[in-house]
Image 1 (cartoon, rainbow, N blue to C red):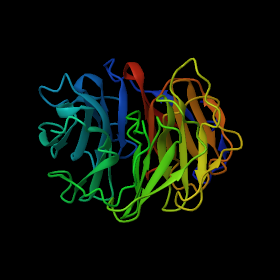
Image 2: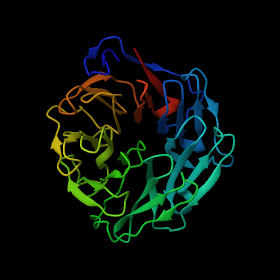
Image 3: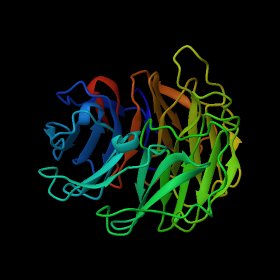
Amino acid sequence: MQQQTKPDGKPNGKAHWELKGSGTDARFRGLAAVSRNTAWLAGSKGTVLRTTDGGANWRNVSPPGAADLEFRDVEAFDGRRAVVLAIGEGEASRILRTEDGGASWTESFRNTDAKAFYDCVTFFDGRHGLAMSDPVDGKFRILSTGDGGRSWKVLPTDGMPAAQEGEAGFAASGQCLVGSGPRDVWLATGGASRARVLHSSDRGRTWTATDTPVPAGDPARGVFALAFRDRTHGIAVGGDYRADQASPKAAAVSGDGGRTWTTAGTPPPAYRSGVAWLPHSRTAALAVGPTGTDLTTDGGRTWRTLDTGSYDTVDCTPDLACWAAGEKGRVARLER
């Protein structure tokens, strides 16, 4: 990466991604950045890694017996407490929790509904969180926890709009379900005739759905990731994940909490699967995908490519650190 931004959103020519050897070839679509020193990765073959020294060393803290699971999301409260989500049909969808830095894990949820397929998990605080499944009986299914992920319950669906035919979430970066503040949460969809963003202001009990201009109309297209820097300002990225397909209009912005979305004037040039606001910035954000990293300094209206390395997900921390992770064990930290 040749250029990045300072916290005030102004260009900084010295910032770049610095690769950190993970010691594995797992594909990491789950990333939880706690600080400049501490981060968690969750990926294929049941792999979970943790660093507490800025990526110089990674400890393999994978749950025992998890080699057949596909971890696609991890949410960490600190360097010791984290929740990971495994995806898949039926019992392949599971949630596990650790309180000792991954030395031991407890399975707190195992899906027993063959029609459910869980994609993403998010937390509002140290106690309250949600997980989402692709539609079951015509509606997206939401799990809720009020004890930090120790137990989960399925929420009623009477406040959930009907799903479109073929509509689903994408377990591509752990960012298809994101929250901001104590109660607001957004859900990204694709695979149907219209790519939508659903919003709840009551921790997942009632939802409203809004169409986005991100291309849809195919199982491979839609909104793959969301980022809200507060309950009003949001960015959506996605496109068509097939490498041989173009992804025009692959980003959109909202200034009203997701009630309306506008196509980026200059969107990323290709499919993007992850997005994150830079720490303490009102205008700067990063988007990542298999073909590169893009930067916006105007709140998502225009993007420019800064790096061509492959990453699936990106996350930033209050102490001015950003991390990215992806295929073949790739993980990097933004260096200035």
